[in-house]
Length: 615
Ligand SMILES: Nc1ncnc2c1ncn2[C@@H]1O[C@H](COP(=O)(O)OP(=O)(O)OP(=O)(O)O)[C@@H](O)[C@H]1O
Ligand SMILES: [Mg+2]
Image (cartoon, rainbow, N blue to C red; front, side, top):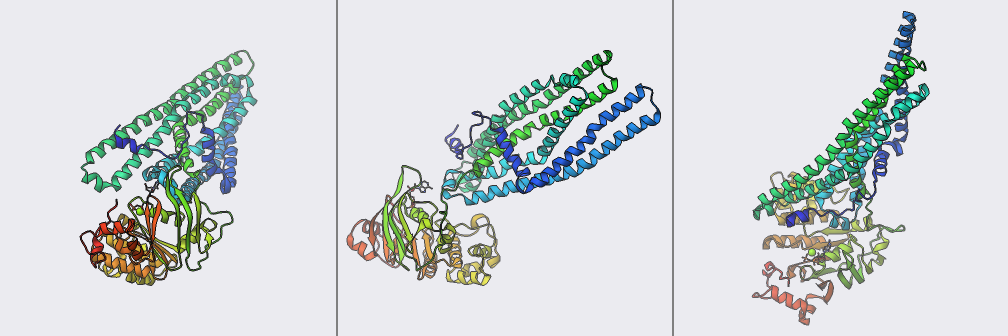
């Protein structure tokens, strides 16, 4: 396997290894719970009741036919014969009518179950903390929403109601068989142990294979998602052929393991059918012996062989559905493992909404690590007073974005406190906090929608006029009106049909629409030309006016006017102060500044175009 296949194969949500202990029944029970539990319970029980009562009609049919045969063999009247035959037809019609109603209920329950499962999954993923997404390749996760829930969907659509019908039928038919002839029932049951062994063996072999297949499908989805969204990188590195090869390899392994899984489980059907035929032969043989011995009538034997057939068909139905069922269990297991993930950042039980009192932010000895054992922020302490602009600078990987991540509480700190207007961050609801903190991220993210809708996204009650006003203040109005359909121009995925600078201006306008009380900007001015940078900077200034704001910058010119500049290095705040103070110290900041403006007069008007040198 190539290095990249290995990286595509990282699977991070814990799926319990199926071979350790079979969790088939608990997972199946949980899948069924969606169809039969909660609000669906009443309807489900009604459907089961209708199905059971209807089956009585079906079960009566062989008995009624048996009676007709007994009339014929005993030389009874034609009208008596006709009566039994009509009764058999009425029983059949009764079965059909009730089954149709029950079937309708099951169909509704199945579609509703699927809808609930998918909505639950999607909504649950929305509640998970960022640390979950750090561990989880997006394509793999999408595979759980699509491939895995699809496997469960097929079970709901085709198998669930048939299996329920089969089980009811088996129970009822067995009961009637026992009543009619315990001897013949025992004879028919001879094959049952073989069927159980068969089912057990198929499950043992197929279940791990299906689990593997769903996992492989997750890997291939992950790889495809990465290759398609990273198309430019694939092409520019001339790796299309390689991507095709890796894809083939992954698809090949899905095929291998899939065909093994399906083959084993499909074998169950012909084997079960053969066993059912053996059962019929045994019943007829033992029945004939009993007739010869004068212990029973031919009518009973014929009725009984009818019952044997009624017992055989649900058994073969179940066998026939085993691949769908086992595959659904494999998919269900993966879906449930996501549903069982708990968000790591949760509101305290007594969390209160954040009350804005000017925007005073204190970091008090804050330590933080993304993964245990690797400290990223070390003893960060600083104080941002209301309305202050705080600049964050430092080499790449120093922890600037991380400070923002914990200030917005995407992650919880390891130790130390963060106070916002005197309230501990952990005592506040996340929702109220994020409502007041506007964030313009390093990577501008726009939805596949119109420019206007991307702006409206920021605030539920924003009007179009608010958005246009915000765009004007963010200096974005001019270029937006020059787009082919102005504010109604559709963005392609993630705003790919705009330039990076334009995307940034829209995200600034979006933050302006949200009108937050505090503001966080992560390198919103990188990679743009000087004129655009100036426009963006004016936008940022308008946006941050009077607000406590945190501005991360690679270009030191962006943060020169900050009240306090925090200089980070390897997770530590090594210096802090105003630009002039830091320059006077001639320390870390001074060196960075000088290296950035090498060859130019420090503070020169056009000097902002120089790139930050991250060493
Ligand atoms: N989600 C994550 N999981 C684990 N480690 C992470 C994660 N995000 C960042 N890190 C690590 O944390 C450190 C700080 O990263 P951070 O993104 O805060 O840097 P930064 O100062 O914003 O850098 P840049 O200027 O390049 O944006 C880096 O060493 C990085 O490898
Ligand atoms: Mg960063």
